[in-house]
Length: 165
Image 1 (cartoon, rainbow, N blue to C red):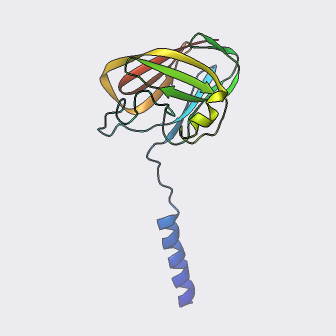
Image 2 (image 1 turned 120 degrees about the horizontal axis):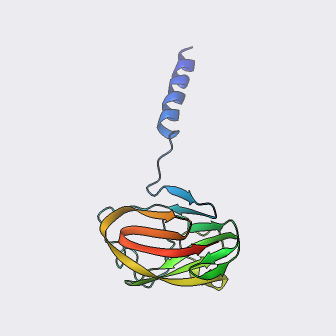
Image 3 (image 1 turned 180 degrees about the vertical axis):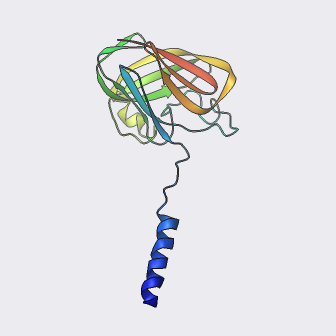
């Protein structure tokens, strides 16, 4: 009986110590509108300079953390003034000081942008959008959708891509 109680107690301790899931440092979030949904990792600023330092200008970025961001169009439409077919795409960006290139790529389930050079031939479209400097700091990467646009904001930078359905 003592051995049984010892093993039962040990099992309870092990379950409570190792059975708890840790919250990821960059939680995954999905935002949706009537026509579009975006699933992305939400890294935090944590006192860092984001664009130009953490995320280098001119370098392809996964537009989030961990798995590359995926965007799903529920029907055919326009993305940044260019035609896009209904479906799911990986969303990459190339941040620059005054302008970003926003890229839709058909290769899904990417981890970061590490293999981008191997899949860039699968780009479906690229659009250039102005980068705006904001007075407010956005601590955690935030992507928002409206009926007519997708906005990406982090640190003191914001870009907006026009949507039309």
